[in-house]
Length: 605
Image 1 (cartoon, rainbow, N blue to C red):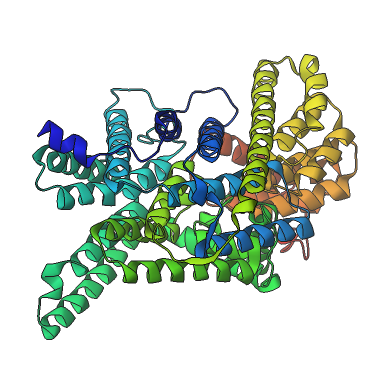
Image 2 (cartoon, rainbow, N blue to C red):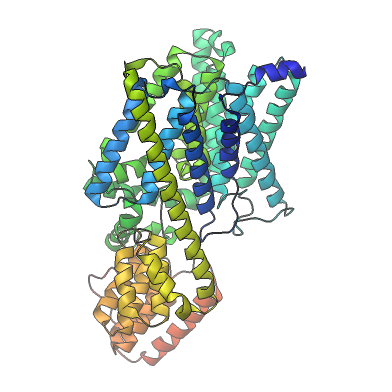
């Protein structure tokens, strides 16, 4: 049995060191120590550096003459996407180091994997093993047996929230099905696949991820429809079963919608506002990061036009449209979406040309991630990106050559790729160092030692000018020490990359402190329209009107706060309401206006 197992699992690379690098690469995707401001930073850098070194070892290896000789259609599509992405980001002035690193790493990884998919079972075992470890870690978190890195959620595994945990489990789920189906002659591997399925489904249900549930059920449905059993049925019976499956999905969609109705309606609001964004820039989009930059302005405009909208109580700061396809259109326009569609068509063609169980597994992975992408943001996580590329590489491993390069181009190609990889590694290490330094100076600042670390912030600013969260943090620290004009200058830069209610509130405070009350009022009203369910913008607006000795506006804004429904009760909101009641009492003998601020987006009931 042992000999049979070892014969089935052959090392896929010519160098053992490359195999080790590959294992380190996968392991690094799920290790998240608290070394950076964001817990998702370390997996990105570790997986990126591991991948680059892995690709470098592959390039300099002696048995890789095919590296640049055979060029396929899928690789041409990827090359076209890189060129278009670079032109798009330069045009919109949104080019930054992280995007360059991410795009080239993904492309290099795909090129390497497409030429080295010698034994699919090896990858299935590795991915299912990692998935089981991740799944068990999350399950133990749910029962409070191990600490949770994301303390606000009951279960998140080694990710920052349940979405990352769920997409990790759902993306490797088809590989567990593969082990059960393919290796029925090896009992231990079949048992291993069954354990994986049980752990993955348990973890997904405990995480209560509707997107992952949809993805898993879709994958199981595809496996059933593509099975020999289904194809052997009569045409009428197959039609009846397909209709039944459609009805099942409709019922499931209704149940999932009712289970978390507010969450579903909130995503409908995001979708509507995103469509307005797309309508204004349909062809080329807004560039990388365009959603974070522009979306909240569109949401504010929506609530300004619809002040009585039922979606008000569902409003919040939004940084992702919860749909990867919408995000692609927002950032790259319909041109970018068309490139993605062409790549999908090539995937379907590759599967139709070879319907092996390995290809069925690969396309199942991509189907699951594609379904997940309709309702969440799986491609935010490196693990899901790499798993998707492994699946795509397997589908295209036997793809016909579009054209063949001459042998004398091999050495220059390998040299240029090696130099580019080394450049990307240096750039990645440089960015990682900056993120680490930011975390080191943020900790003393939180402890009240802001003045001592401000020179460090100033030095980092020159290196992290395109990092929206860093710019917000820097602006907040300048506000804290009373440098309001400098803070505004930093926050204006921040608005080019990240613009939400918190940024607007900070801008308003800066203008209020330097007694530019009109601008402070403008930013407070914008902050309110961005997230009208929040009390803080209105409360601070009432205090601003009181400072400006505008009695009528103060009274009506206070009345709005007192009459406003509370979504989540808190002592802070109760205190605000009590303070506003005192203001109303003081002005009770004055004339009450119906609308205190015309054309400002505020509607007083």
